[in-house]
Length: 169
Ligand SMILES: [Zn+2]
Ligand SMILES: [Zn+2]
Image: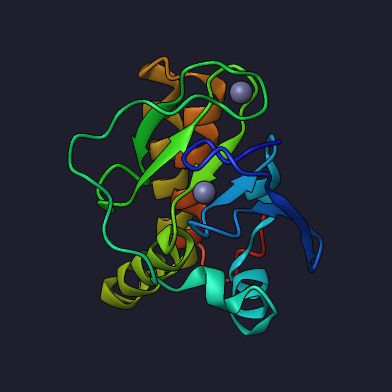
């Protein structure tokens, strides 16, 4: 499988229980279908200190603003850009066809930072309130009629943020 940006071959890495393909040139990260749902904050901490730590930091110049749709390296469909958790400002590329995900250099780190900041800014709320929030967000996701993969990302983000003891899907 080749990098959707540089077209060079991606390198397979197992980091904890998560299978990643990374690009040796632009340091982007490819995640197979639902592989991102295995990522919990604990795994993320481990990833940060693992051998792929350097691919989690931004070393490359910021991408161009005229963001052209990427072609999925797995199934060749056009990928969609999705603002993680809708308000994070981290625009990840996801494939609506095979549910794979492309993260540009530094985007996984940006997501981690976003989750940490969001959690820190939350007031101490009781468990019951957290549960209600999760239910509410689930309902609005269902109502919005989003694709399976978009809904998964949203549920994942909400669980991360609102359940401080959330350990992954
Ligand atoms: Zn690349
Ligand atoms: Zn695909």
